[in-house]
Image (tube, rainbow, N blue to C red):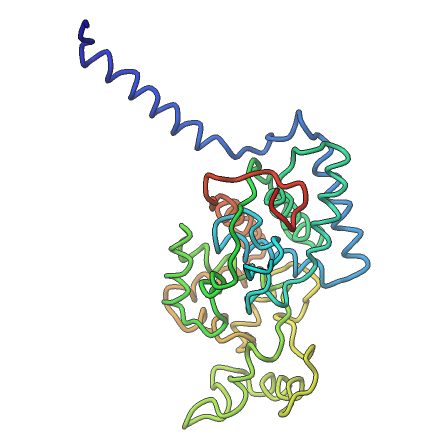
Length: 323
């Protein structure tokens, strides 16, 4: 049998590898559904807007849903899968109990299945819906890159990897770095808390018996801390009690950063952004310049949206269950 010179074998291998790399980089694109589901954006935007009119908490919940989905296994809609008799899924992990509003994604998916069957992934619906809730709340609009596939694995135990409300800056930096996000991305994406609400359990430790020297976390504005105490009495029999994370909770703006500089960060992790030299200058910049924050937020959201799940994905027919 004739031998093929090595140089003739080497070239096709290199060509294949280069082609594979270029295809993987081009896999997500804003025009992904232009031919197969051109009405996609309108269907999702109308669904989200209608849901938000009936429940003002929807925007914050959808934005949080996107963050929590992407942080676990990449943006693969694993947060949408229901638990089964043999598996407790992400949505039932402790940090995700209060996410809710999954029905909005279900509604959008049902409408899309009628318009363009078996085409749009649940992961892409979450990404687009997150952009829409930000824009309709007064924030920036950006082109969402599309073409994600839905994951097949969802484990509640994985939610322990989500950034906790008591993290310090070093812990936050490390957590975001694992997702390919830098310090500026971390501070920028934290600005999503401008639409946020927290139950008392996530910050009550700052309000009483904080340390041997301080009853209240000394970083907190005193008047603000006393107000939080009233919101979260001891004992607290109201499971829905809590606090909005900035003073304009239904509007996407830069008030979150101004609140941090005034000592009114609800989470310890948020307030820590002011205390560290690596992050304070970014907080100050965004507090001064809302347009800068909007520009960087859109950039960081695209970057977060590039976090990929495993290669073994699918387009689910129903977002709550695997095909």
